[in-house]
Length: 530
Ligand SMILES: C=CC1=C(C)c2cc3[nH]c(cc4nc(cc5[nH]c(cc1n2)c(C)c5CCC(=O)O)C(CCC(=O)O)=C4C)c(C)c3C=C
Ligand SMILES: [Fe+2]
Image (cartoon, rainbow, N blue to C red; front, top):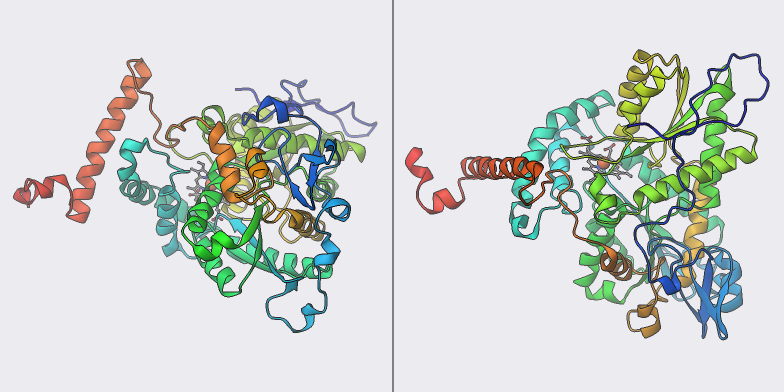
């Protein structure tokens, strides 16, 4: 498959010889709308706020998971800018300043804004801290129905299958983690981001506590929630540390939160809001552009460097079958960064590809490895890799990009290789995250489930339940991503059905033998063989 290479504007005069990349093959569409479609009536390219009677209600423009809001004054809907709510808050809702009680900062353990204790929950994936953690970490990951999605009939196989796949995958993963020092740096970096965000919020007069909740390893989301309850937080902003939304990342964490919230009286009453994706924020785009601009300067002929955006992939079925907005958001994000670079007179060729695929199914294309080889064949000599779906260094940047893809590139004819670091605690980025939190505060709890109007509007910046409900109402059944098969009598279906049946039989046997429990033991068959 051809990679969507975007040719540069004519190179500025330079003494460097220029191997012009091929012309633009495809374009990441700026106007591509997410498959998560809203009712036509409220789908609009305009960004609007809704203010009514001293509180705000929000609704999406193109996608229920974007943090644009739709607004209405007493006389109807009006257009305004995307979620710059300090100004908005002044005009029509809970003024941010009025909520702040700066003196509290000096003596309170849990900071207060007005009568509220504000908390920010950062969601991330988590990573094994030692090599012994790798297999149990992988088990947690594959036991997630948003990662391996089985048909309902087979959901009882989720955990056994997770055990099976995690044991199979562990040796390869361990090798990777061993090569980056024996564990993932994700926890350390996320903790540092949390601390910097906390400082930035205090500096902006919004005293808050910041928590880290990981999906598959310590500190687990459940632990963070317990701490939030102990601290008596009354307003919570949920901020996934993934710039772009995917079912497999932010979606999975939100689904977990939903189940925790549903069963807990304290949490049912605690007001919260979610910032589901934030790739379009100016601060984030500027921070990425700054990093790229800086790294380009390290090349002898910066204008000849191909900017290679590499995003973590997802199985194709997530996007095509289940309506995951991930691909559309990724393409829009790349376009926004390139537009920002263009404003700075940086008009390099660029392309976007997807890395880190796992399992036998088709993932989002073009694949990073295939694209690198293709670029080498086309005569590209200098490549700057930009990890685009991550905001911290981890195995996919430190091992996969820095070691595997670099080696592949150098073996494919690419002579100069560079890589943009992940954002980490870069100050522009952290400050922008703090602004995102502050801008979301007026919306915390504004979409109470009891409000009929709120329920009727689709809320991009909304509660966990409402976001998932909006998402679920649009989604179709997701085929199992890692062990996908088609039912029916097509050739491919026969192959996959056969493989699936074989796999199920093998799995059941494996489980029987390893756990000593199962149908064969129940029926008294297996012990006969012992
Ligand atoms: C935007 C980021 C990510 C998406 C989308 C994503 C989807 C996804 N990942 C797997 C399987 C694995 N992911 C693993 C590690 C891992 N993945 C991400 C990010 C995204 N995953 C992160 C931040 C990490 C942690 C890295 C660390 O330093 O620990 C792993 C384990 C590592 C390995 O063996 O490669 C697996 C496996 C699937 C199946 C998937 C979508 C369905
Ligand atoms: Fe992953």
